[in-house]
Image (cartoon, rainbow, N blue to C red; front, side, top):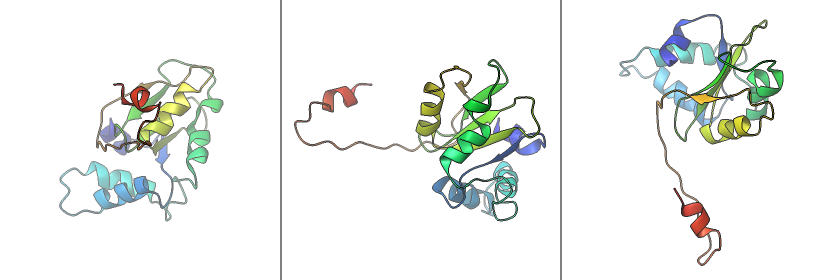
Length: 151
């Protein structure tokens, strides 16, 4: 869980600096009315040294840092925890190496990374912390409308 992630010291974690996800954790982590101290703990780590210690400059860097091409084996050592059904997710590699890294980012992007991982070493699991919806606009009469409208 994210409470466990916030309390532990073995896995480094972060997101893309100055992104919407970064701002989300800043807003939740610095809100004096927030009842759950988990966000404050997560924000302290994510923003350490102005985000230079654990956060990254791009999604591809975050996925690479934690990601599939570094994995040597599959199984319980690797997971993507669902933080938000649309907003963001956590890519986590608990592989035995010097500094395991967890990457918080957009769910769709990380699911795509998992789906395109040829070695099938990344799985999706966990619960949603925040859910945001979105739509895709198409030209009237588009032949793709029905395909995208399927649930």
